[in-house]
Image (tube, rainbow, N blue to C red; front, side, top):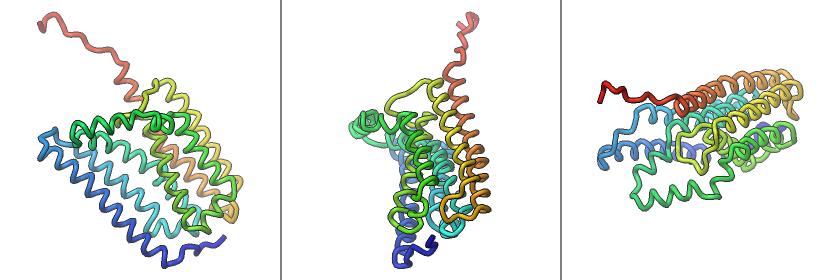
Length: 265
């Protein structure tokens, strides 16, 4: 496996462009959040949303540029840490930052309605379906680690870029199909999402054990074992947060409403 496949003539401009992109994304979100309350006189955007968004962007940045990303080309353990950041933790944090809700409340009414219709369109309904999102997310990982795709990724810069983009987008779609923070095309019942979630968790857990016992081509057994454990236990830690949020939403949606007492009339 060629661990030095990225030519510096590509890597240096790429990292510079990505830094500019991440800074722009941070400034846009923070700027829109401040402007919506200061100039549109809307309710102040919660501080914790800003924190989630900033942490989410930092997770994405750490997985594609910088020391961790550079080491991931040579060390499968570092690659798996980056996978957790890019495909699981960053999508969760960004979903909790509710970017679409922020955008919808800031846009003019006409533009907001158009965006809302687009989010509820058939085009968005298919990839945001829990089963489709799970297949894109977990199925994509199985394809990556059980075929020659992982080795090919480390030999081709643009394939490497496309796979990282897929990992992030599939992880984000999976997250927003399980927990509803932003508006979504079609809402499925908690039972339905819970069943799909359990199946997806099983697929992720089995894959991590498969990697532990069957290293991808060119990966030393010791690195594959550590990487498999990181994927298994790290994934479980993030999934516990997802499960907690799903159960909390479920409880809030089904708990009995307190009736107004007669004495309060």
